[in-house]
Image: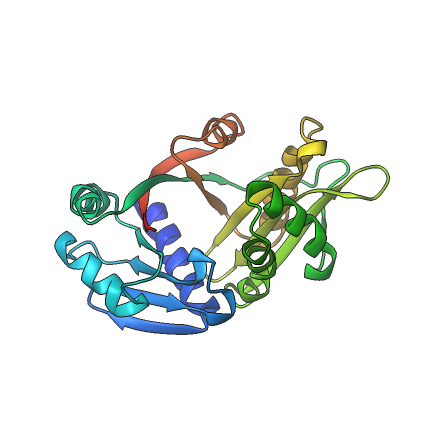
Length: 253
């Protein structure tokens, strides 16, 4: 499915540009920056969206776009270029996080019983913040990573924050859903179940709701990005997702 992979990567690049506070165009790449969320690598990174970039130029491009003396990320959307860049960037002090792009069709997808519902950022703020603190005790980092969803509202034609609740009404799990009817694509991002509520099917409810909403919008394909070495890759595969290809993120502390 090379065409679907290219469309998904084009969607990701366009989303990054739209949500960015600042964008700097560079040869074969672009840098996105947002001082309000300075600790969020998603909002301060170099995205390489052309396969012909020479790997040895990437550190200099990142320094030009983001500054040489701060932690930053380079996302390489082309799988072959990511492989060629890996040894060069390792020598320059970067660590690699390999990702896979997965997708499935939405045809026939209907709202599940007890479907997830849209929520506002205000409703999500406390659960997001508590979860980020579990992952990292840095309070300012947790605050920025919770608040950065406000910037994501600019990223797609329609951005929906979905939440699955306990019988008592507590938000137990959440995800972002990005819908673009013109592109014929939807993306599911950051599907998380809070630790006390895992094992109760909230992830399946969120996924089924996202697929159903995409189908209702006339969007035939939904994709997502998963870490290549993490368990969600297999979880999504069991739910009908097919791997389209890989991308790479390179982090320099």
